[in-house]
Length: 330
Image (tube, rainbow, N blue to C red; front, side, top):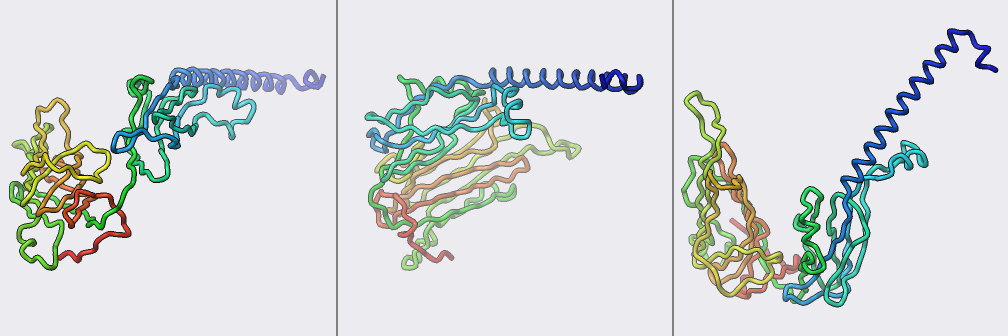
C-alpha cells in the first residue's frame, strides 16, 4: 500500500534500484560459486604417509609430528551467509598432530588442501631440522604420491649423544672479475700457539665467473655463462655430502680438491649452488655449508656458513653452544 502511494517517479527509481541490486547480487553470488568451484578443484585429497628414524636407521616411536595443510574454502556462500562478509574465512591452515607408531610410521589421510608440510617433529632427546624438503604442494602432485604406505616420506632425527667443545664460525668472500683465478687462503682457525698454521691455512680457493659480458655497443648480452669455484684442502681433504645432519665426519672418502661448476649449456643451468661438506685439515675434522652465487656482472660470492671444527681430532661434531671454543681471530 505504501509503495503504490509513492509518486510515479519515486516508484520508478525504487524499481530501478531493486533491479540493480538484484543484478549485482546475482553477479556477486555467481562469483562466489566460481570461487567455490575453483577451491574444490584446487584442493586435493591428502593421503600422506611418513616414517621417522634416527641417524643410525633406527625407527623412532612416539615422536609427535605436526602436519599443516593450507586449503581454500569450498563453502564460501554458506560461510558468508552464516558469518557475514567480514568474518568469512575463505582460506587458511589446518594443523594436525599425530604420533609415530612402533616402526616410526605415521599417516594423515582425512584432510583436503592444495599444499602441506611437516612443520615439526618432536621427541625428547632428539633433534629435528626443518627444511624445504618437507614441503608438499598441489603444483607438484608427485610429492603426495611419493608418500604412500609402501614408500613413505622419510624424516631423519638426530639422537643426541655427548656434545663436544667445537669451534664455530663463518667466512664470506667475493671474487671480482679482476681477481679471478687468484688463490685466496682461508684460515678457519688461528691457533695462538701455532704461528706456522696461519701461513698454511685450511683452504685455498680460486674462482671464475664469465658473466654475461657486453656487445660492441656496450649492451649487456642476454646469455648464459660459465662459472666455477675450486676449493683445495691444505694438509687434508674435502667430501661433499647429502647428509641431513653434519654431526659425525666420515673416516675416509676425502679428496684434495672440490670443484663446483656450471657450464652455459647445462640442461638446468643455474647461477648459484648450495652444498654441504665434511673436511679434514691438519688432523682436525669439520663440516660446513657452502653457498656459491655467480652474478651476471662477473662477481662470484663464496659463503662458508655453519663451520664446525673439532680441534681434538675426534670425528664427533655434535655442537653445544655452551661448549663453544673461543679464539681471537686476527
